[in-house]
Amino acid sequence: MAEAKRKLAAIVAADVAGYSQLMAADEDGTVAQLDACRRVFRDSVPDHGGRVVDTAGDSVLATFDSATQAVRCAIAVQSSLNARETDPTAAPRMEFRIGVNLGDVIERDDGTIYGDGVNIAARLESIAEPGGIVVSALIEEAVKGRVDAAFLDLGDQHLKNIARPVRGYALQIGQTDDAPPSMKTNTIWTQPGIVVLPFVNIGKDPDQEYFGDGLTEDIITALAGCRSFPVIGRHSAFAFKHANPDPRQLAKDLDVGYVVEGSIRHARERVRVNAQLTDCATAQPVWAQRYDRNLEDIFDLQDELTETIVAALEPALGKAERQKAATNRPGSVTAWELYQRGLAALYRRTRESHGEAKSLLRRAIEAAPDFTAAYAALVDAYFYDVAMGLDDDVNAARANALECARKAVEVDPHDPAALCSLGKAHIVRREQQEAIPELEAALALNPSLSWAHYGLGAAHSFGGRPAEAIPHLEKAIRLSPYDTHIGSFLVRLSDAYLFQGDYEQAEMWARKAIRQPNFQWSRQANLLVTLGYLGRLDEVPAILEEVRRHIPDFSITFVRKHHLISDPACMETYVEGLRKCGLDS
Image 1 (tube, one colour):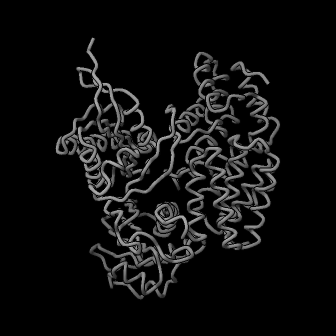
Image 2 (image 1 turned 135 degrees about the vertical axis):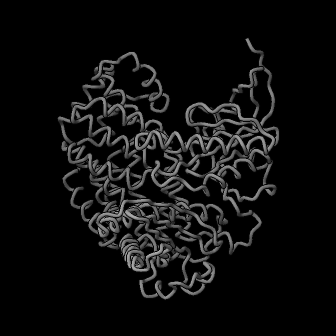
Image 3 (image 1 turned 120 degrees about the vertical axis):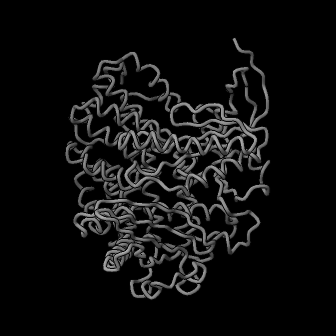
């Protein structure tokens, strides 16, 4: 047996974001992309003095003697992967999450490494954004000022199977922590504006320019309907056609924080659209995507691209703003920054982070009483307080959710996010019939609102109409495949199949949900229910142990109290599956 020795090392752990979905869409294309991406790692790691330890499945594990070289390697890899061209006929672009940690590891003579140092790197990778890097506090302290990146403090992270909290930092590649404040944060006191520049026709046929103009107009209209950010009107935006303006100048001329721009290229029966979101303060892109489509019905294509691009822009804008809010001094924050910090805390999904989130969001409302988005975010907090068992007083949380949602709609009855929040408030109160018209109204205003599709799916499923739920849940997943809430989207799809009696599909989607970040008891509970009906009881103890590590009093009584199912037959279906697993009341 190989002997083991201990050593201090910098560990880089990488994994493909959404690998299962990529494989489901295109196995051959995904495998080809994975091979190409691994070559980038294999070339970059030795160049930075490191060693690739393992490439099992869709992951990469590497070790370095230098923390600085480990982070520089991670930056080089992400920069190469994010800039690469991909085959338009292959699977969607593959993105990696990367975690970096400095810690004590056990190294065997055969080169394999083990230990908490490795486990923490892997857990930090799981909370990174697709295409992003998260490092531990030890790495941040060791390399700050030595790499071409700024560090955004994510706070203490409660990582799976790690006994103590670990402080995480997200890297902003290409920025530095000593940059002038005007280059790091948006100084506008309210949410920043956005301008959509006319998409450029780079093909050979000038007659196709109308397609780019039409797509631009549709995106402007759709973003204006979202009401998440002020949007510059068509006439002002089209004044910059063919001008190729500098983003910093746009910020001065139009008082905006972000610019959307793109290009259109036709080739036979195919059309390629590139879209990019740029931060005007830094002139750095914060999101970019390429879409390749068959050119059949041009108007249907225009609608589909508009919906897809707008659905991707909203979370990208929110992510950029949360990162900016995290860098500002606590004493100088605005209502907008308090809101963004509240969202960041909310997404951590723990009892402690929810308390922090609600405090920040209430402060945002105190500073700006007509802040619709802050009310809607508070509804989310109360929603998950009930659904995840984070608040023992579920009746109070349900009442607070409805009160906040009504205030949001009172402030702006035409805001789709406000209407969506009212729908979610009814869902958490198990009032599914009341939820549906609010969510449908939200989608009438913003068809790209993935949360509203999720809400409709949940309301139909919990209300005993699972067949009607599935299309909405599938669309929520398609519109926002890397959503912070994707685990919730997936487990609700598991619910719908479960209530239809399709236990194999229910099991598959429950397992997909479990692989997403953050603990959510209903993911494991769904898996238990399906295994109960499938008679695979040998798998139950391990799953039940995992649930009870987070919720010691998990039982049928807990499920009846916290689950949002309102249809009695569906609830009995759920409970009976748990009974088959040996759970009692």
